[in-house]
Image (cartoon, rainbow, N blue to C red; front, side, top):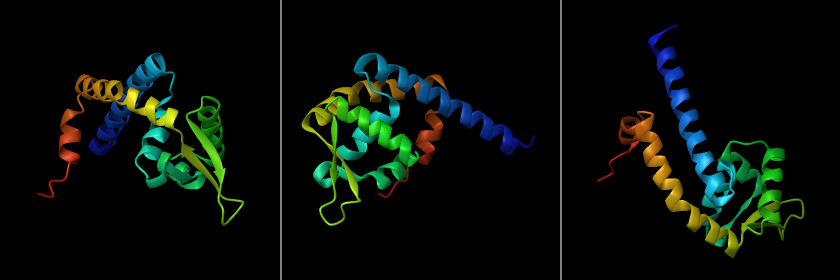
Length: 136
């Protein structure tokens, strides 16, 4: 295998390990999966705290049915609702609720702490630092 192939395999393993660590912390402390946390994070950053389901799927790199099931779980927990587009009744939005925003804000410090620790544990600190762009 080429050195690029070896490096890629190492990177994939590191990312999978970091994500597993994050998933464990979020599930144990907040009852959230990693995709659910990321959906709340995305929605919390948007004006109106809403996004078309198709766009949410694209952001999360998930297929439509996976995002529909995830938003259904968020809806059952009161963290998000689904709303139909006023202009196009076929368009469906995921909308963050106040409870969802509070849940995200409560989970965020644990996520950040776990992320820093996991990046360090799996030797990824340099990768993160190298990926930052100084726009100074």
